[in-house]
Length: 265
Image 1 (cartoon, rainbow, N blue to C red):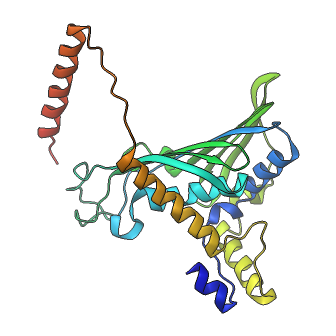
Image 2: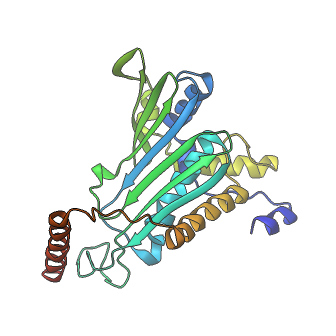
């Protein structure tokens, strides 16, 4: 798609809406301004209680795609990616709610990714459909040499942006205009307006808009998580010299299996 779109000469864009949140743009400005010194690490988490597999392709693609793009938006190209992905199809398969009427479409999965950027920043994100959703919020934290920034996001808006310095252990609120908290117009509306303007001038704004090439980079990162999850070498760790612990471990595993068999759903 990226290659074909490029050959056609047409404007092409991917709907990565986090880029258009004023609070995240402010977070990026403060990182680039040096408010927390040299950035070292990015952490992000976004959970939800449910999902439809056929509509969202699971948490890795539905949420992970936006978190990978968020990382690229803040720190540029990714260099390497690994991760874990697991689907737990039995957890809510017989749930009968408005958004998951078909048990065949219900997904209860979890994914986590570890990655590095070409600029040297390391990152990690975690997302799960079975973990508490914290009100549908995403949490982002950037750790730097001199301090850290963190943001809390709800659907289409940013709730809080905070900063802490190593000389002061207290988190401080970063002032944001009222429209930034209400996101009026919404990030989606701002993105659509940006796309229309890009079509009128014949090109995207490279500082904020995401092209098909950005979408391809994110797709490759998600593919890497699945590949790594299937091939990742695990290092066995076992207290072989302590028989009591071994027995307790086996007993615990049997208890967990028994609980799984007794699930009422």
